Image (tube, rainbow over all chains, first blue to last red; front, side, top):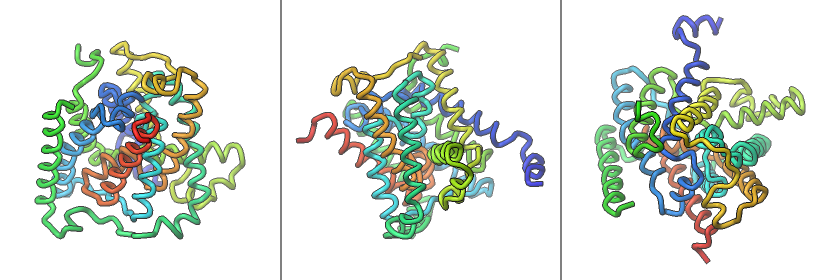
Length: 187
Length: 172
C-alpha cells in the first residue's frame, strides 16, 4: 500500500533518484579533486584550501535557495538536533579519522570510484567497524554523553533571535569575506 | 564537451554545482544530501548476515532501519559518478598509497592499509556519534544554519587539523 502511494506521488523510485543524484555528486567531487587523500589532508595541514572552498561555496549557493523554497512552501527544512556532548566530542573523533583516513564518508565512495585501493579496503572496512562499535554502544551513549548540553534542532537565527533573512545575509557576507581573504592570501 | 574531460574544475564551480544539487535534493528527494548513515546500514546488514536476524533488533538499527534507501543508492552513485569523471579525464588509476602519505610514512601498502582502517574506525564512530558527516552536517546542515551542524563541522576540522599536524610532525 505504502509503495503504491509513493509511486503515484513520484513516478521515479527514490532509489533510482538517489542513484542519479549520487552520480552527479560523485562526478562533482572527483572534478573538485576531493576524492584524493592529498587534497583532503592538504586542507587539514592548511596548505590546500580546496575542501573549504568547495564546502563554503556550496553553502553560499545552497542556503538562499533552500530558505526561499521553504518560504514558498515547496520544501521543509531538516535541521538536525544536537548537544555539546554529541557534536563537539563526535566532531573531534570524526576529525581524527578524517586526518588518518584522508577521506570522509562521501569522498571515500568517490575515492573508490577513482581506483584508490586504500579507500576500498582498509578505509571502508574501518568505517563499517566504527559504525558497528557505535551501534553496540548506542543505548549507553544515548542515555549519557549524547544528552549532555542538549540544545535541540535550533538554528542560528533562532538562537540569536534575529530575522532569518538577516541571519542568511550575515552568514553569506561572512563566508564571502573568508573566501576573498583566502584568495587574497594566495591560498 | 571539453569541460567533462578536464582534469579538475575550479572549486567554486564544483561548490556551486553541489549547492544547486542541494536545492534539487530538498525538492525532489525531499531530503538534504547526506552520506554517513548508509555506512552504518551496510555495517549492520553485514553483521546481520554473519550473526543472524537478532542484529537488526539492536536499538540503533531499529532507529536507522537496515534497508536500502535513497541515501544508500546515493553513496553507490557517488562511486560511479567519480569513476565516470576520472575515466573521462584519464585520472583513473589503481593506487594503494597516496603521495603525501608516502612522503611521511613510506610506500608500504600494508602500513597505509592499517592507517586507513584505523582512520575509518574513528571516522565511522565519530560520524555516528555526531549524527552526521562532512555532507550531512558540513554542507547540508550548515546551509540550513543549524547550530548542531555548525558545531560539528567546526570540530571535524579542529580534530582533523590537530591530528594532521601531529601525523606530519608539525607539532612537537
